Amino acid sequence: MDLHTVSTDALASFAVFADHLNFTRAAEELRISQPALHVKIRKLADSLGRPLYRRQGRRLELTAEGEAVARFARELDTRVSAFLAEVRGTAPARPLVLAAGEGAFLYLLGDVVRDTLARPGPGLRLINGDHARTLAAVRTGRADLGVAVLDVRPGDLTVVALASFPQLLVMPADHPLATSSRLTLADLAAVRLIVPPPHRPLRVALERALRAAEVEWSVAVEAEGWPLMLHFVALGVGTAVVNGCVRLPPGLVGREITDLPRVPYQAVHLPGRDADPRVAGLLTAIRTRLTADLV
Image 1 (cartoon, one colour):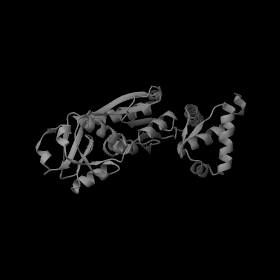
Image 2: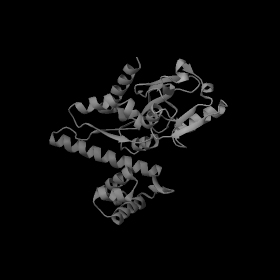
Image 3: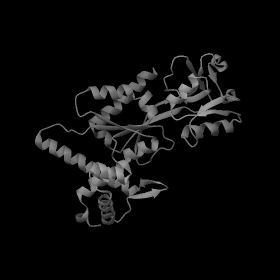
Image 4: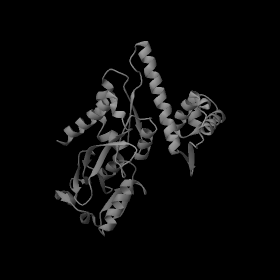
């Protein structure tokens, strides 16, 4: 590999491409043509001697080398920005970046986001995505910190336990099962459930558990996201299994399903990233808030 052929412009362009994994949107942000962006990334890959992305069906994904290059490009940009701020005697202008899924932002992180944005400084930028996108954002250096429910503990990232929540069956307050303080999977026999679309992690885990318990059940409706699921419960369409961190609207109650595992939320960051006082402070703020909410 000839380091003299690796340009900072190509690295910066690749970092933008890594954000979008789409040549059209990346080229629009960079204000260059798609062919020009293709050339930049191809020359960068040739210089490094490694493929930086691959096609999976109709979408693109970064290779491990691509993740490393995107991470390096962002680290380089951060170091240059910090150096220029030091020379000019100004505070770094780069905001912290927090990545998480819809449920985490809705029910766990709202107060922390509000408090962080209210303080003076460069602020906080948010990335919303499922756990795969959250991990990708952290791995590529796009996000300083991610919050997610992890099926498998990633060996290349630092993982910090935040809190765990029971899984609840949510129903109208006058539902027959609402008279019980706790439920088991057997209580869900013949219950019509509002569930996520097929292949979503919650749907897969729930179906597996019900099948293992030999419980017969049926789908009332498929819905994407807890707010819509709870809306359907309130309409009387059926009941739904949700994480215990979800705040229930008036008229609905939740009962713990004791033979379903608790759902753990974790924070993830690149090794050593918590040496940055701002990252460490954000992580502490999240843990403190969640601890207070659980008391």
